[in-house]
Image (cartoon, rainbow, N blue to C red; front, top):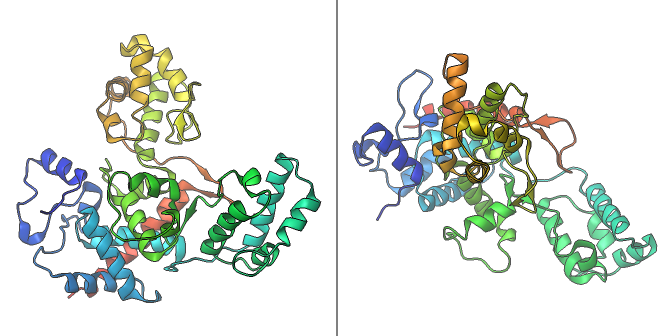
Length: 391
């Protein structure tokens, strides 16, 4: 039986149409991908296409400079088929644009300055745990499981896969490994789409991974097949409430629903008369869990509790939905927008670009989520132009 992702069901219900209408043209696309440059409505590829022809179409969308285009196309097809994402120029171009931006179609992308990044990380944590430098130097001179010393491996680092393997060995083998890192591998994203390892581990608890693997799941993120699968999942396997794809790309960088949440922050700021940071984060988090300390958004919302006719627990209840589709239907979101719309005399945008400065040991210049989203959107448009080759 064919599986349909939630966002297709939502689109279908909103339009009053069945997903199985016009089966010859394939299922409906989400709104942010359904509009073509000429103003016409785009559709998925014909359902009658066999797998071989579908893969050929995908390969023709991939930039000519990419190596092993057929292999990339195969991994993309497997990901889409397993996730139930429509096979369409728009959906494939969205993922292709991310891959091109993040790795230029390198399955194991090189990262400049990795030796410096690692030595800095070790130095900072050694200082935190008050481990003398002499002990660090002696430990790094030990022979690692691959026959080279840890110091030699650090000096030769070029790729994220090597970096991940190094830290896994250091945690398990060095005398101070567990004390220094405590099971914490600082490599938190990787692969051709720079996917969060935390996301991958959460996703497999909800949906089966399509490939057999041995060892830790995190190692799959650094492969071409795993990186493509989890990257496609985080980009497409949720009901993005947007009519412009640039906001989906912003969510990929800043976190799902960040663009929707940034619009809510803007509306809350209008209603309260206070200037809020439009970063898409409605609550504070500690170790991945909502903090009990109030965020800027929660504090402002509480000042409007009487006006919104909502209690403190009710406001907190709705803010806890910030990372799900359900927040769009919450009383807090609906009442804030209703009153803010009325105050300004027109509907406010339900999507806004998150204002975030990107920070990472791998980023060497000042970048923002907006820069990322628009850069990817440009690559997406270029990919759409390549679709003219489709026969």
